[in-house]
Every structure is written in C-alpha cells, then in structure tokens.
Image 1 (cartoon, rainbow, N blue to C red):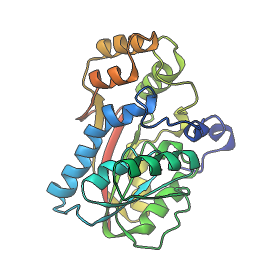
Image 2 (cartoon, rainbow, N blue to C red):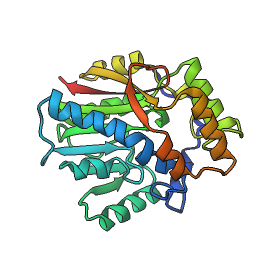
Image 3 (cartoon, helix red, strand yellow):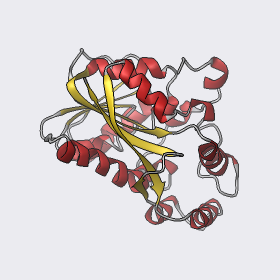
Image 4 (cartoon, helix red, strand yellow):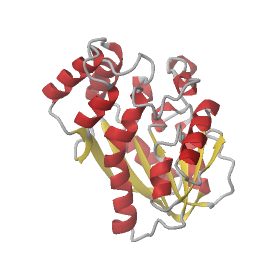
Length: 267
C-alpha cells in the first residue's frame, strides 16, 4: 500500500482521540468497549500464542504499544508481566493512560510520538503490538518498517485491524458510523479506503523482515439479527455502552471479512 493521499487522510477524524475528557476508561464512552468487548478475545489470543505456541515467558520481556491511546491494552500486557512502553500522538490520551496506570499501581512508560517515527533504538523490544491503529496511520509502509526496526531478532509483532471488503464497509462504515438508528460513533472515525487486506499486511511485513505466522478473524458472539437489535437499543438510549459491552463480545473465528488479528515473528 502507498502513503494515504491527502484527500483520503483528511476524511478521518483522528482528532477524536485527543478529546479533553477521558474517552477510554469511562464506561459511558464508546472506547470503553475495547476493554469489555475486544480485549478478552484479542489479548487472550496474543498471550496464548506467546506462551503456548512460541514458548515464551512474559515476565520481564519488553513490549511496545504502538498507538497506545489511553492504555487499554498496555495495562493488560503490564499485568501479564511485560515491561511496557506506550507511544501515541495524542497528548490527552497519554495523560489519561499515565493517570490510569498510576491509579492501578502499574509501572508503564508512556510518551507522545507516531508509529512512523518511533524514538527507540534498533532491536530494543521483545514484543511490539499495534491494535486499532494500522487503519489510522498516514504511512502504513513506514509504520511497519519502524516496528520491524525496533523489534529484536525473533521478536513478536501482534496486530489487529479491519479488512477492506464490502462487508466491512457495510458494518463498520454504514451500520456503526453513518446510520443513526444503529451507530456506535460519529461518522469519520474510520475511512473505508484506509482498511487493510490481510494479504497486503502480510506482504508489507515480509518486505520488512517480519513473517506473519497466523491470521484469525474476530467476530461477535451474537448473530447478525441480535446484533442489529442491540445496536438499535443502544442508539435509542435503552442500553448503555457498559450494558452493550456485557452482551456483545468478540470471539476468535475463521471469518476474516471484517476484523482480524494475528501475530508475526521478525526473521
């Protein structure tokens, strides 16, 4: 994939993540669903493959959270035993992350910066992960190149992102963003043209010395009819985000048509 053009990049609302208030941990905010609906699936998948498949111990290993936001995933990795560094372009999100980690007694190092220019030496992390982020960056090729550069040889790259398919356009763009009767967020949080096909991500990783070992889908634990019903209830104010998050959980699947996750190893 080439660098995203100005016309496309200017349509995405990345300033959403720089809100003055806490949009990450407040259960009345959309992003709290990352903790309740998404993390059990994706972090469980990451840790399972790190410890069981790759036979690695998390204790004391260095991990870089690229696009850490308010620390939703960083705290999961830290609690599992990793020594975590988080980086994000949003100063307000970093402040939220620092505050929340302190409240929970977690020693996580946070700083502002971008995926395309990581301020770390070559070969400095055992693990790097980038979740809910790759579909937001301006230069995906450069971001992958930087992640590979800072990973140690044999280091592991975990990711999740959104596939670019007609179904993902329907669900993520139309149902989740544009149709008021079902929307979880305002339009502009995602832009369809910035979604990434698994084959494209595999090719980029390989070009920068990272070999993707597995890709799996993430799918809701409820059928489409039930999901639409719950979305409509939430849009009408009959369900809070917290209540929605208790009912809708992402689960590992073989369906890659919308969201997918995976892991790769630096050669």
